[in-house]
Image 1 (cartoon, rainbow, N blue to C red):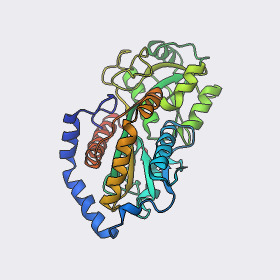
Image 2: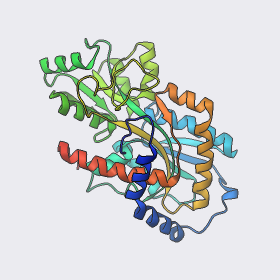
Image 3: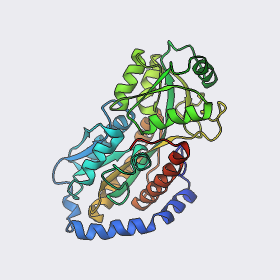
Image 4: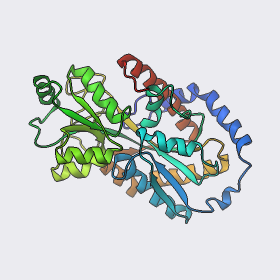
Length: 341
């Protein structure tokens, strides 16, 4: 992503991304003609559609996926259900979708980890994040919240950094798994602030968040959809957001960059993908319905309340954005020197 921390995707960014990946999209289109015979989109879907989420129930991706699945069910008159396949920060679910029949009945609901994974698993990733998928539609952009257990005596990033420097190696941060957005956010904070905090990986954002709430781990970066209810209830204290700009749902919460670390920007793109080779007629029908859904006032308000902003867009724009994002994270991870393979 060229700037997933921002709440809007500018036409300039989308155009640039589309140019980056023109060849990839052509290859995907050609693949669609060879892998699967044309389908009658008017009869789609003919059975339950399974929306694959690569994280445990209760996490940021899961929460918003269920909102979209319910609306798709209403739009198509056929059940769209969320299936959680946690593991390896989304790799398990994405691999399942990449190897599924290209008929639109198995879809992926992805977040930032999808385009981060190639930079962290260059040798072991079992699929290509762009070529092995048919982009359907962007749904929303979001941010991660930097939250701490209220027992930790810090109220802002400055106080957290001061405490971490006084207690090197004694403060832990939870993540949904090695190499994902939650992990990379923590590593970037370590790099920018020069602190020694310990990474504790979990199988999903939900379990990670639960242990921060329970006090087993002191802090985490996690998507706003998952943390907002706990921030409101007082079970978590939010001290910053990871995006380049503040978010509508938390207007008084500063960004990490504002807290003294310019250039810190980790956001999230939520999107729907199908297996490569899915007929264009099905992709376009899904895209059309999703465009209507994200334009609905109740959906905008509900996702805004979760810390997200709806964006929509064409399959070509999503494909270009993904290709540009893969390139961005490869360069950044090389700069940090982080390796997981």
